[in-house]
Length: 489
Image 1 (cartoon, one colour):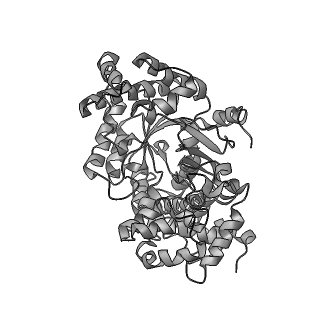
Image 2: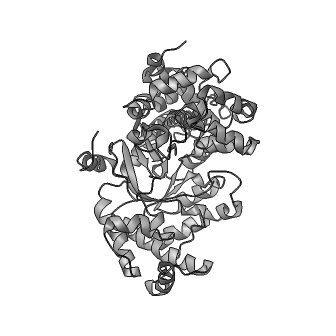
Image 3: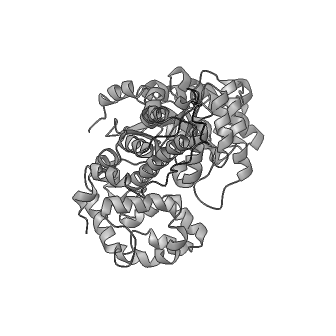
């Protein structure tokens, strides 16, 4: 039985990931041989040298990774256990509570069984019996793969069975101690920093670990609703007019833009991202209705949201913060209108046109419409695409997206990884999958003759961390955050 110490050696982990079978990459395909007397043009990659795949794997596995999207709660909150509202249960089932629970429910697992599985009141050792009937159906999805890798690397358990569930729970309890965030993120996953979109209500979270858990400003409540209760009190502004609400928005940027890495909106769960520029005079009558609690039509609500969206985005642009927007697939189950998702890429181009000085980051590759998102990044200078979440939605599609992106759009416009989790443990599994996918994409491009080995190796550092460092100005942000008044570690 592997001990915790041995399973938690990042060097050993990287060695295992580079071993035979760890990466399913293409091997030896090449272009047809040329005649003996005919040398290939200098611009055409020649047949890859033996061992090129191994060199790419080693470079990808060793490079630091920037994580551009998480929903991690504070470690101190996590250590409260189930007393915290975001910790549904403080046992091994917590790893299944985000995303994988949706695969289980769509496989047919009864809601009542899921509720008991994630209950803090059920003995952890009894939970395997609830999961077991559905495990075979979901265990090979990307959501499950990230969790299985995490269980293997953190707890030393290769497969969930009647005999191993106790070891999984034992490993969970042993790991979940002060300092385990840095253990998982820095030591094991080799993640340099994470960018967190806080889900606990604050527009900006004053993290106790600000240089590790860097924060976005959440702008969705600034324009969707808007959320007077969450945003106005801390600003100390009584909202009686649209002008007052503009002041609230500006307050958040004036106080936190220097500490934030970006702004984020997930409003695409409710509507298309087709935000038009609407003048204040047109939006104010609707705002007044909302302020008074009066009903508004869908057309009126869109008018107000569109106006306030640009109020927040213009503030972000003034403060040199990139704007992250959800596109594509929805979390959850039985709720996604696919026809709305199909409109995201076209609407993204309109946003880029309407605000050429804003750096937009379109998240989740717009899955399943990722070909269109490559076209957006190729055409628009201010468009970037973030692969966050995509490796566990569909790891093969994510690999294919990166292959196509590299030979289509400028390589400095892609961000390869964001695990997008609330619990920290599956971040490790997702990071392993992302590294595998990046290595596989580059290796296949070399094997197929689209890149030379040197071209592929030159892309590793920019893709894994260089693009994010530049786009989010992480060197300067790190210096500023290290001196934040609320920093404790």
